[in-house]
Length: 318
Image (cartoon, rainbow, N blue to C red; front, top):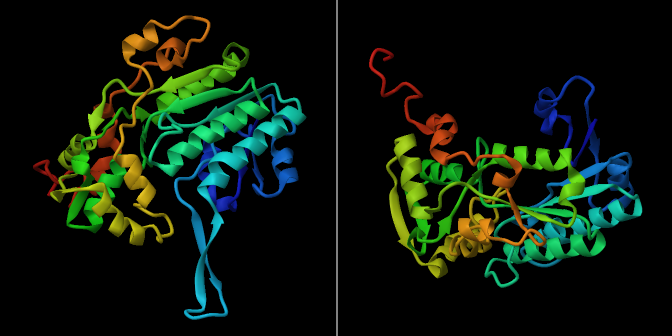
């Protein structure tokens, strides 16, 4: 039985019901500021998987007594989503004697990062391990898949604007991993959770790319032809300060900081292979999961951006 905590209404998650056998899933409402509601979700759990995270502060308008009589207030901060809530979950797992906790973090987690989000991801890991020392930490690189915020980001930006910005020329490297591969790896942990207690799993794709290469790769699939504009990170933050007020922002100043740094696994392939068994950091390869190349998947969800439809380049359809 899978219990899935959610904060939305029925329509926000009903598409997930078809992924489970009849009666094998239960969706329970919770509030991150209501500890009892969170305890109710995990009350009967043997394994808890924390997927909660956010890359921007959720903001809402509030009335004020002074001109302009409106103010943006932060309703949920990235610190609350990435540090406080995971810590609370870990504390509940300890108090309720849950057998295993899997905390999904990020390969970007780094206390020295210029990105506040990356620093909070690291802090969240430390708080989880402080409250629940046996937790398994999963660190994926950037995810790609049907609803990703990587390749879709480039395509959506090209759809809205005549150019796509490349932070500092798009030279920073990333090693994207297919979301299905990460899900399979987590599933292997769930099958043998005791083996992974107090250990870490790093998930990453088979090849690294620069952001400039990913932008060109996306355009090759979608047929879009935006100008790829090299913008210094300091300049890029000016439009980011405006776009951050969107409901689901495409760009924030902190995202600019993140895109100016490499988003890679901690070790090289040889480094992972030559580890001592005692303190070994697991990879998907250790779990029997082969990383899928981005070229095999991207077309399936990017071709929708083609003007004229999927078969526009195929003779005989038009």
